[in-house]
Amino acid sequence: MSDLALAVRVNEDVKHIVDASRQINIVALNALLTARQAGVRSRGFAVVSRELRGLSGQLETAMLSLDELISQLTHDLAQSLRDRRLITSIELAVAEPDPHPCIWDALTRAMSKHDSIEAAIVVDWQHLDQALKVAQRLIAMGGPLARSAKIEAAYGGGMAPVLRHVAEQVDMTVTQIVERLRKIHGIIDRGAQ
Image (tube, rainbow, N blue to C red; front, side, top):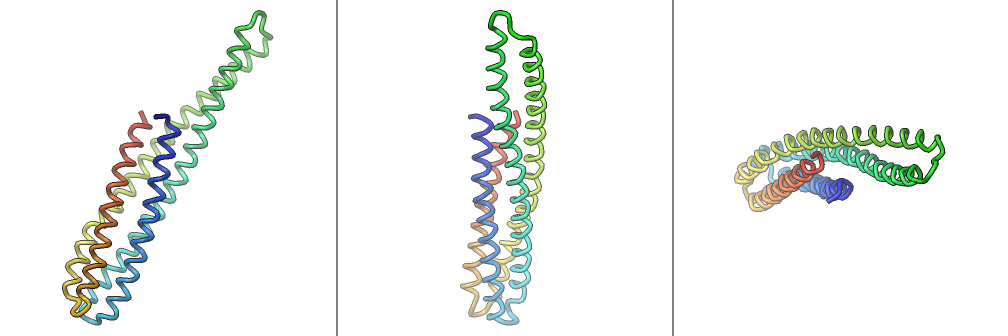
């Protein structure tokens, strides 16, 4: 699979994670409102809900940063493809009998530009890997928060079933995000090679 196709796959997964982080935010806001209705008994759940909302905001920011890096990578990969086509065309012109001397200069410039773009692509993949690690560290906090939400739901009195359902939704969404991030990590590893 080409690097460009890998970047597109990563971008698709990032969009799913952004949507999932927004879903966590909405579910956590709903949980916060539900916890307020449940009263004093569910204050702990309200605290966990606020933490989940903060986590979802941080995760969304991290994913949008990753999206910007993917855009840069995609731009550089597309430029690399254009440069390769130009180099191939110039090489065909050089192969002609008695090529004009400026063609050699054009080939040298095109190859130099291509080398610079290829070096930038390596750096782009490294930046993606670093940004992904930040996102993975963030979502690692989601698991304990989801477990805390489940524990706090038990103290919700008559609202406990609703709070438990919300906690399970958060847990399921966090698990999905973790899996997507693992998938992205595998794609980035392939692209960085």
